[in-house]
Amino acid sequence: MAKKKHGQRLCADVEVEVGSSITQCKKALRSKHINLIDFVRMKKRGGDVSECEFPTRKALRNYILFVPGKVFRTLKKAKENGFISQLLIQVWNAG
Image (cartoon, rainbow, N blue to C red; front, side, top):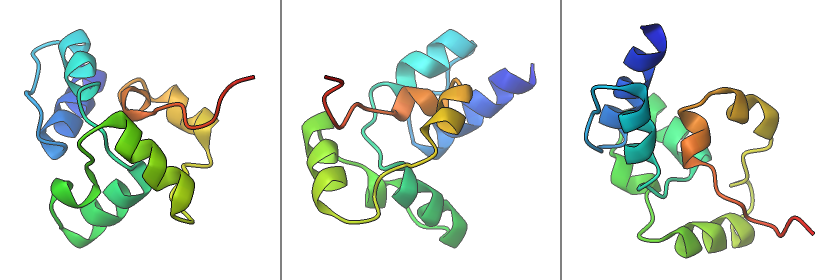
């Protein structure tokens, strides 16, 4: 139950429809392109999610590549959180 509640809170924080199930929350989160570094900073100072949101995955990727300090370095930890992992994108080619 706590997982669902955390997922619903994240959905509300990033301004997507709050699903009634974990699966619905994860699906809704996939529609957002948010820089996690900026998102955490925005939450701490009480800003608006639009400050860290991008219109496309490509725009977010370019921002991460060309603006220093915008890479989420603790990827393993992020992947452990099923909801945060829905916001992760691949920036560099795997091979």
